[in-house]
Amino acid sequence: MSLLLGVMGDPIAHSRSPEMHRAALRVLGLEGDYVKLHVRSESFSRAVTGLPALGFRGANVTLPHKRTAFEHCERYGSIDKTAALTGAVNTLSFSNGHVAGSNTDVFGVLNALPSEWMHGGEVVILGAGGAARAAVVAAALGGARRIFIATRDDKGAKLAKAMGTTLRAESISPEVLGGSFLHARESFARAETLIQATSAPMSEESIATAFVRSLPTDALRDDAIVFEMVYKPARTALLRTLPRNRHVLGVEMLLHQGAKALSQWIDRPLPEAAINAMRETLR
Image (cartoon, rainbow, N blue to C red; front, side, top):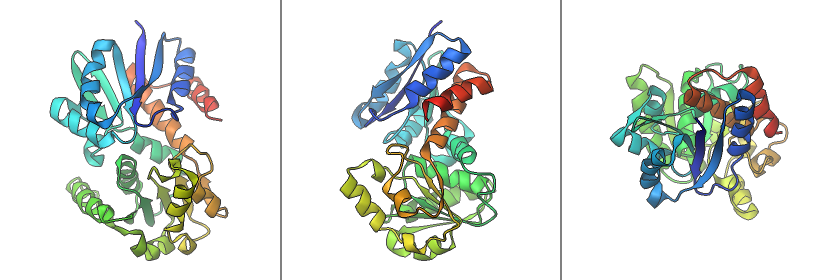
């Protein structure tokens, strides 16, 4: 039976997931395909409902749909524990008329970052969308003592309050705070890791540059890790602004979350050869 998979987003043309998953399918000897699905927000739930009828086994979800995917699965299907913690779904699995939502982004973050990235210190996360939610949970599970969610407006503070409550209910209890970029200087100065989880780098250059200029990057320590979740462009304005810091690129997260998702769809761990084939497509 052919294994039909895809990735849903808006925009979606930039996605490198198809080439990555197709490489793994070839190594695994599985007949199938992985395709881009351009789905607008107003059509998302209808699209999810229709995918099984078209023969899809599963689909990844990218911006701006991860929160909507969570709400859809919570209402019409099921969600796993990691999705429940994040309040976001990036992986859909279809079986016998049932849709199950999971979040492999948390796995992607934890495996993209070096093993020494968190020592009970502080993490600053930029953004309040699905990727930022995954970063918060990954930081909490990784042992962060303090997490600061920074946004242009009050969304960071609201998300911090909500996620702090969710994490405490699971006996995961870092201090989770949030605020605007204007109030993030002290957290930047203390941070061991800065995670960029907005879509700003995908905007035109002038907007992406203005975004970075709004951040207190001069306060960041030279030994802090800078993790840029956006993988296209490969060298974003933030990374160019902080050349002395250790960089972790978005393709690492893309690789690990994608491998985790594919292993769920085929119901077995991926062999190293398949993961290496996926990695080769991202070079």
